[in-house]
Image 1 (cartoon, rainbow, N blue to C red):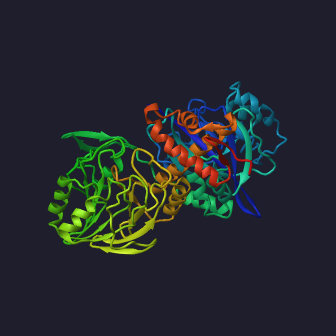
Image 2: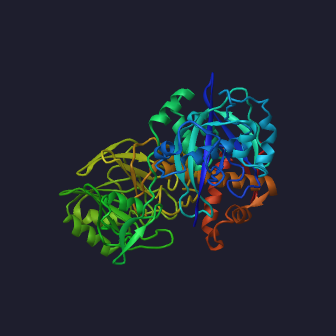
Image 3: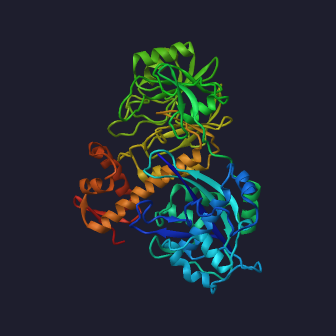
Amino acid sequence: MEIRPAATLVLTRDTPEGLQVLLLQRTWDAVFLPGYYVFPGGGVDTGEALGRPHALGPGDAEISQTMSLDEGGADYMLAAVRECFEEAGILLAQTADGKNITADHPVHRERDALFQGKTSFAELCRQHGLTIPLDQLAYLCHWTTPPGPPRRFDTRFFIAPAPTGQAASHDGTETIDHIWLTPAEALEDHRAGRRLLGLPTVQTLRLLNDFDTTETAMRYAHANPPAPAPSKPWPAIRKGGPVELEPGAPAYDEAAKLDPEAEGTTRAEIIPGEPVEIAAGVVRLTAPNPGMMTGPGTNTYILGQERFTVLDPGPDHPGHIERLLELTGGIIDQVLVTHTHPDHSPAVATLKAKTGCRVFGLKAPEHPGQDQTFCPDDEPGHGDLIVTEAGILKTIHTPGHASNHVCFALVDQQLLFSGDHIMQGSTVVINPPDGDMKAYIESLYELLAEPVEFIAPAHGFLMGQPGVVIDYLITHRLSREHKIEKILQAIGPADLKTITARAYDDVPRPLHRVASRSALAHLLKLEADRKAAKKGENWVVSSR
């Protein structure tokens, strides 16, 4: 699939409330991100800017070097300025005497002509004797759409101070609203479900939330251009033969971490019973319980060199338990459990009987689908530290998928054992009454505050860029919640089956029974937030 080049311009202004950014709301009729608030931006047309007579400031070679491109960096900047003019009505341009244009400049009357393609940006600037001061922009961040969506973009984000004397105005076609907000306000609106934001927008707002003024944000951007995103395939082994992993492939982050010299020595497949050392003193051993809900199987993690800690021992499978005892020599001092679903904790009883290990975890709640045989010796509190030979583990309570769910962070190695709170390749099912969507999302926000470099999930490979992974899960859940809320507003009272069919129309029908559990979890969250109410078998918008 072709990845299209795109550019985005983050306009800022300084106010008594602090630095503010301009956000535009996309039309609800848009194919891509309908109703979302975004920064002005769009596609890059390199052919239009050939020669770049309207560009002023640093040359393309200098800009491209900063952006880790061979050429064409200036085209991204020009596209960002053009799109800002088309979508927001603000044009960063200078007249022949070097002054920024204001709202009364005649070029503003030709905004529609540019939007409709009746003229090019370069021609418009030539007609009015304008140049685009590229030195007023700074390269802020870089985002490439992960594999999967029907449209993928290689987007460069730039930051620039909004010119004085020009007011923002959405175009009424592609954008239907605009607003100036501080990054903190925008992020809080997103968290509260008041405003839809995409993952790149959220990540950019988090970055800007550290700055009080445009000057400090610009200074940061000039001094810290983003590192090049992974772009080259990584060699690995699958089914005994060499393969090339594209960025975004499930095994890519793990291969790059474990094989930094790209010698092609890591496996691009998870094989139950085959140990893989994923970090110093940490071995992954996957149980032979593959399935729709478990993927390749449940990952058990073995920590230590001489005396061992086992994390999530998995199902009570004789072959898996025998392999654990073989790899540890039976010297297992302690066993930790993230939660008590039947693919995670049943092996505890057998291991304790054979090794006398101490068991850490939270008791199973009185709900179906829980391992009621689990009997912990210790119930660690949030923030409690547990010593292992691989380092100190920090306990992080993360209710949501299960009310007794716990993640463990290997502090020194900044490795998060996420259990089922974060899985690779799919979102987890939130199954009421024990599953709680509101608690799940709040727990994800808790994890954002943890210093983590990699996530070791209970299902799948190591995952890099944990902040991006967590923000994706949050935005995905909030987007689904917003979709459900709009369905209730559109069709009135509706039962769970009807809501699921409409809200999960992007999910194969055979999975709707499972999806209905998450749909119910979303409805219960909306009820807790006083946005929905249940009347009989139907759900309605809350009158508050």
